[in-house]
Image (cartoon, rainbow, N blue to C red; front, side, top):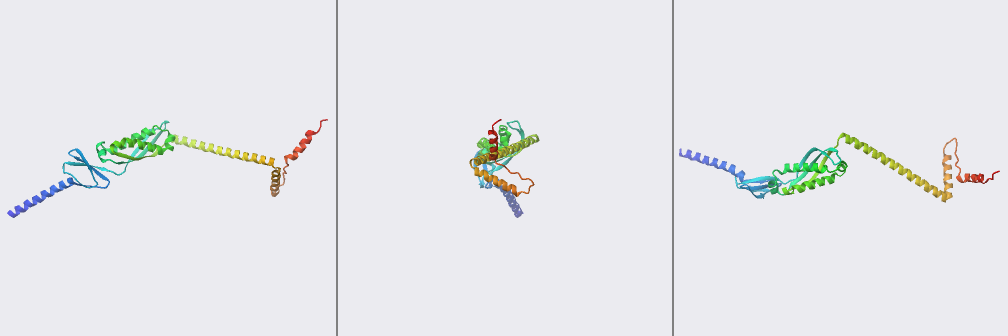
Length: 262
């Protein structure tokens, strides 16, 4: 009987120690990954930031908040925005940010991820409401940088660094799409007419230069005349038109003008 009582008491002690260690050890030792930090609160007051690796805590006295130090992403849902020139567009964006100060990210703001998300959404609406549609479509990179700078300036007290903000998609109304298509077609027609007029101007300029050269060099005119005759003779035509130099006609004109009146 004494041996059985001793064995049962030892068993009770083993069970008690096992339960005690199973409760105490998880509260005392924590393992943090390389990208994690632990903000330690001792009796409710900030104590220090620990990690990564194995950290030791005082059970039931120390409490921790884990903070992910990697670059995180937030999708800003598509929302309706009215631009400066009163065009309604649907815009969505994505924000990349990371925690640079775990202490401030936990203490200065209640939940830094939702807070940054709401801030990105309101900043997107504010900035895009101050630009015109053409600027939004053509200068998206500068707009992204402006939004990033505004959000980063406001999240700096929270220990958060906004890496970049990208406007992903800008959806236009169907009526605006048709208007822009007509505008693009009109612009293409205008450019085609300008190019055609420029070509005609250059051709006319070359003809004037050729005429001036032939006027100064009669030999060039004679060579051109012979070349024309050669080209006509090579073609199989029933009729042949022989160009007559204007000087030849001027001789007759002068003779008629000099003839005295009766």
